[in-house]
Image (cartoon, rainbow, N blue to C red; front, side, top):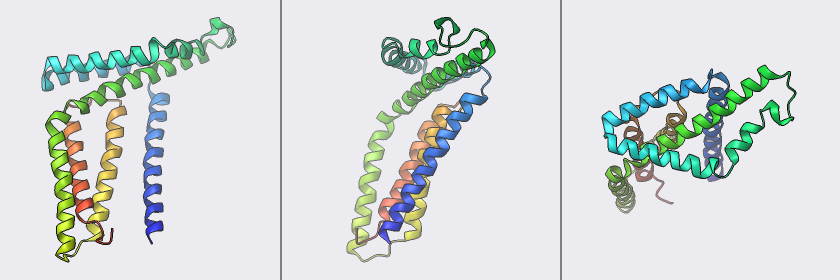
Length: 212
C-alpha cells in the first residue's frame, strides 16, 4: 500500500514537471518576439515599484541583472548560444535567413524568459523576512498537532491528508507557472501562493497517519 502511494506521488510530481516543461516550450515557440517580454517586464517592474516600493524593486532588478551577467554573459554562454544561429560563423547556410532569424528570436526569448524567472524569483525572496517566521511556526504547529492527535488517539483523516498534499503540490506548480507566465504578475501573487502552500502543508502534516 505504501509503495503504491509513493508511486502515485512520484507520478503526480512527474506530471507537474511535464506540464511546466510544456508551458515553457509553448511560450518559447508561441511568443512572437523578445520585445513582447521586455514590454510586460517593464510593466511588471513599474507595478512592483508601486506595490513594494521603488527601493525594493530596484534591488530585485539589480540582483537579477547581476546573476544574468555573472552566470551567462561573463562566462560566454550567452554569446556562444547566439553564435549557433548566426549565418556569419559559417555553421548555417546564408540562404536560411528566415530560419536563422526565427532561431535567433527563439534564443532571445529563452534568455528573456530566464531573466524574467530570476527577477520573479526575487519577488518571492523579498517576502521571506515577513513570511519566514510564519512558515516555521506553521510547520511546528502542524507537527505538534499531529503528535497531540497521535497520543490522544484522535482520528486523523486520510482524505484531509490527501487534500492537503494535493493543495500544496498544485500550489508549487502554480509557483512555477507564476515564474514563467508571459504576462504581468502582481506582487501580491507570491505571498498568496506561499500562504496556500503553508495551509496545504499544515493540513497534510497534521493529518499524517499515526503509524508514521
